Structures are given as C-alpha cells and as structure tokens.
Image (cartoon, rainbow, N blue to C red; front, side):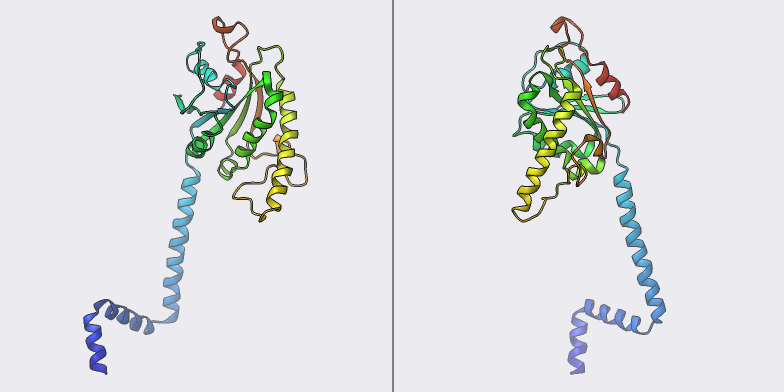
Length: 259
C-alpha cells in the first residue's frame, strides 16, 4: 500500500508539494504560523484600503447639463460655449465643451435616453445643472420632480455629492415662475413622490432596488437635507432681446466659475 501511495505521489508532483508544505507547517512553532497569517491579513487589508482610498480621490471633472426636452438645455450650452444665439433641436446624443478645470456635457432630455447617458457620466459628475422651463413649469412639475427623484436617489450621485444647480430658464417670458416658487413646489412634489414610491415598495417585497432614501426620514422633504450643495438660480438662454441680444446667464456663469 505504501509503495502504491508513493507511486501516486510521484505521478502527481503538486500533491507531493502540498504534502511537504503541510509537514513543514506541522513542524513549525504555532506562534510562527499565527504571525504569518496576521502578516498576510495586514497586507490584504492594506491593499483593500488603498484601493478604496485612491478610488475615492478620483477627480470628477464633468458638469452635466440635464433636464426635460425643450427646457432650453442645448441653447444654454451654445450660449455658454460661444455667447451667441443658435437655433437648436432636441438632443439625441451628448455634446461636450472642454473647460480649463471641467467639461460641460449636454445630455439628451428624452426620457428614453436619460438613463443610459446618466449611467455613462454620473460617476464623473462634479456638478449637475438641471435646467427647468420656468414658463410651463406648472404643467411639467410632476415630470421634473420624477427626473429629480431618479437623480437624487441614485447611490453613486448621493455618495459623490456633486453640486446641484437648478437653472430656472426662460425668465424672459412673462408667465415664468420664480426660482423660489419652483423650489417650494418641487419640494412638495418630491415629498409626495417619496411617499408613493415608498408605499409601492412596501406593498411588494420591501426592497429598494439599490436606491437611496430621499431626504430625512420622518421629515417633509427639503433640498437642504441633501448631502450636496444645492442652488436655485434664474436665467434666460434666449435673453430679453431675443436672438440679437445677450443671454441672461450671469448667475449661472458665476456659480460654474466657483466649481
């Protein structure tokens, strides 16, 4: 039997090596073996920590220009790029403007395209400029709130906490709502959305699908509860004098300059 075992060991050098290592370990002082295990554990923990630390320090340089269709994103992008009026159409792909410290990216506003482009760029977001059509906000408040809810419950966005600038566009139109009123109505609508979404989840399997709870539990939602800096500002990409005049985007440009 011993000769058969020796023959099998000879035919399998790997098992022979494992057996020799086992015997060597059995002959070692237990304290020495514990020391080796601890040293290996320290190396693994250090590697994991460094990987997490370095990845968390990744420079995020993208400024994402988002919003519903026809909110004026692409004209705003053009104004920031050249200062000139440019007739636009609905974006079906992203457009990029390279700056010295950040890159402005105009993302499509169509609801069927938003998720894939947000997934593509959200990890690199240094700031998000959410463009709102102030002139027809009352009709679009639900859609605007749903898009914001989608963004503000995303784990990556909440963890990275990019600055959130809500650009209340088309202030040149007489019936445009003020930034303050838009903020108040969005807080109310987002609070309602949070209640209905939470109720829908609890009536199913109770899972949240990886999304983050919006705001603070037990309190009505306010933008001040978010982990990122939030700013509402008024602007007009078209400008009060139309195509021939300058855009009224000073407040937006000043906020972008601070990034």
